[in-house]
Every structure is written in structure tokens, then in C-alpha cells.
Length: 141
Image (tube, rainbow, N blue to C red; front, side, top):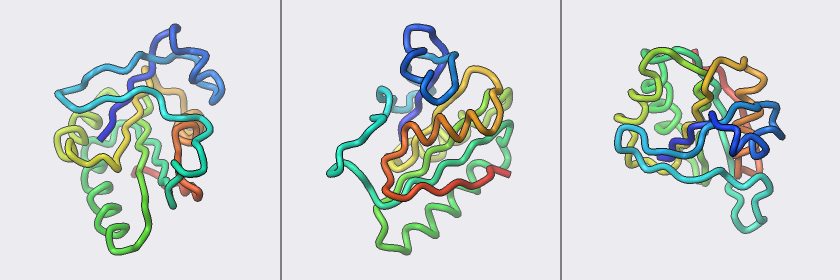
């Protein structure tokens, strides 16, 4: 699992392309592995079959069961996939719950926005990090 915090002007140009101007440098969250920004234009050989982008806001009760069901369904396919959950400034334990439950799952990428920017910005932040040849969206609730 990858957790990406977006909140600092030093990385603002990086995220500015998706309409989100407040970004945070990568950092560790509850011991989860954290990597840098995703490629904005992934090389063809780095692409995977499917990226699922899910913006969430205060979904501490729903996020873990949602990802568990997604993983269960997609694992039955032959697709090479990833899921990007964009936390849109949640004030609850959405990110903490996901981090604890799926710390070893590198198909899950969590992008954390510093404040609530809205669904459109959340989707754009996920699209900017997507590596899938196909990108699908889903509501988090």
C-alpha cells in the first residue's frame, strides 16, 4: 500500500495540473510504506490493465469493507489492477483504518488531500496517479 499526503507548496506544481494546489510531501503514516508522486505519464511498459479511482470523505465505516469487496472481485479476474483511494480531507479515521487493514497490499494507493476539495478534485488527483490503460471510478459510500 502506498500513502501519499498532499499539502505543501513545495510540491504544488506537481499537483497543480489536477486542480489541487495544496499538496503535502510524502511521509510515513502509521508505519505504512510511502512512496513519491505517481508518474503523470507512465511509460507504456509501466501501464497496468485497470485503475479504480475512489474519492472518499469521512468513510471510516465503509472504506475497509469497500476495498475488501473490490479486492475480492478483481482477484477473480486476470486483470493487473490497482485501486487509488483519494481521501478528500476526512476528519475521521478513514486513512488510519485503510492503512491498518491493508498495509501489505501494494495494489492500494491512498492519496490524502489536506482539506476537502470536492469530488472533482479528488477524481483528478486519482487520475493523475493512475497507471491503468483503463480507469474506472466509483463512489466511496
